[in-house]
Image (cartoon, rainbow, N blue to C red; front, top):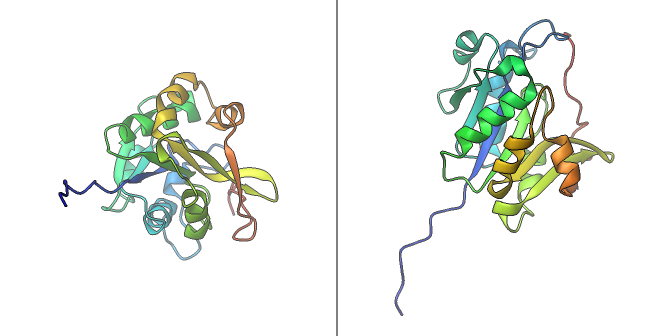
Length: 195
């Protein structure tokens, strides 16, 4: 029996969105630390890596040079030059960087979910049959949350349709993203204010 070259493993790129100024928070969340002093960007990158994502990209904007010093060496910094335009700029920059990888899908989280467990990430990833066309979103007691799995086949259309301070939520609704309940694993809330 003839065998060809082994197929390369299908990879999922992890994306941490951390470019905003964090106005309500009191400063960029990319610089925030948990109660033990661990930078949120480190925890987020570790969570995505633990869930099996590779590579892991961290999108920075406000005070990017300072925040980049906190990003672990195992992750890649992506700077959204137009970060002040809002969340859409961060997502576009991240997807453009992901497009230069061989990843079939991207698992996206914001930096302000420091308690997000890798188990929720794995639950959103694991049942996905065709990663390239996958569109899946974690829910918590039915409410949409993070992480979000976006197949490569959606990246271009999503990036083109993003404007201002809006993320992927409208695209996910319009394209019937599968909802994956994760409320038994975590509460699903982000950290919006200091303390």
